[in-house]
Length: 512
Ligand SMILES: [Ca+2]
Ligand SMILES: [Ca+2]
Ligand SMILES: [Ca+2]
Image 1 (cartoon, rainbow, N blue to C red):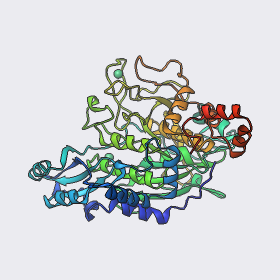
Image 2 (cartoon, rainbow, N blue to C red; image 1 turned 90 degrees about the vertical axis):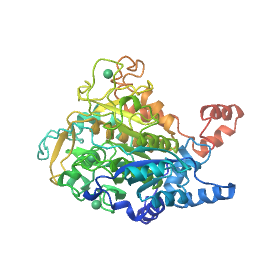
Image 3 (tube, rainbow, N blue to C red; image 1 turned 120 degrees about the vertical axis):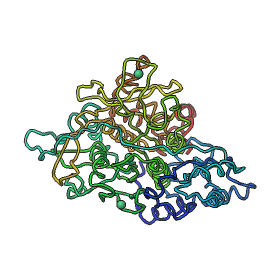
């Protein structure tokens, strides 16, 4: 594959400027106690006020200029839309934003994909805004949170004798065939994993091994509007959850803890406020996702979700704004993995306990099993409100081994669909290392068809989907789908028959 040199820091600033430049400087003014009577709402617009084709083309060119080369390459290779950049990428019309601001509302964030702006306003201002001719509708911004159960065991010292190369991560890796993939020389190298979470401290020994320091391609703190995701703001425990997730994927301390995609690099977005579930967090999530997409993430993992304001009947993939934004990102060739939730389940197939954006159509939704492959009691069940199968896959989310954020040499085990999710994201990184041309639908098809219940997906109770993933078989299938090297094409061209066969095997992507 093409092993890209990821050097995004200068572009991060540019990308962020482009994304946020449509917003007022009010970005960082949330949560102030004197604005309690003002709530956050999304204002959706009818259109983008584009008058003619010249304006459209100019807008597309400006959007493209704000994208990293890696992000453009990913869209070209893996996107599902007719054009690499399209109408949904155009920014929200500035004239509309100005009118909304003139009503007295303060602007949190404008999302091109949603064609909506998150604002803070009071009831009378909101009524005036809703009556503006270019406003389609308004809806409250949802509160956001971490799936509720994340039992973390006390940190223990590093294990020593008797451990395999994977150390504490042996069981969770062996269950899905990670070692066999690594033995092929595939470790996720050249692949960038985007993470939406609470914060990420990287002083742990497993992120700083001589010769193998964790690669961070970029980071942004959307809560505090700064470039440091490792601080404990707003609370000391802020960094724990995200650091657990990062450890599952990127740790590298042989014989102690080796992550499932230790060769990958990471783009880190801090979007989740730990001490409180606040409305603005849904906005941060959308902003973080658009930032990850524009800055070249190849896969996004999110162990966050929301249900308090939405009801299960609304989880049809088209109502929760995180689900709508996630769907747009998947069409742009960005696979997204989300935790199913830790809301528990019953034996009734007509009741669900999902969290948004786990309901989005192309998002890969992950439940949790223990190391013996038994479904965790806390793992949320589907289906979506419109009857689609969710969760779709499973990995170990009980006693999952990772780093302990509180100590540079401590290790711990954590429960939650939060923890099974990065194992699936890691597997997608390995698949993309093996074959960078995979589209989101191809990734889904391969993951599902190689999982433990591929032949009898759980459409009876919507607990287990296609079952426990098999990273090794998935990577082999990904390799099989790989676009032939030019030499292979040349050989095939020597015989028309061979060329026809290749054309049949790679109908949609081989020309790219
Ligand atoms: Ca910060
Ligand atoms: Ca929260
Ligand atoms: Ca149920």
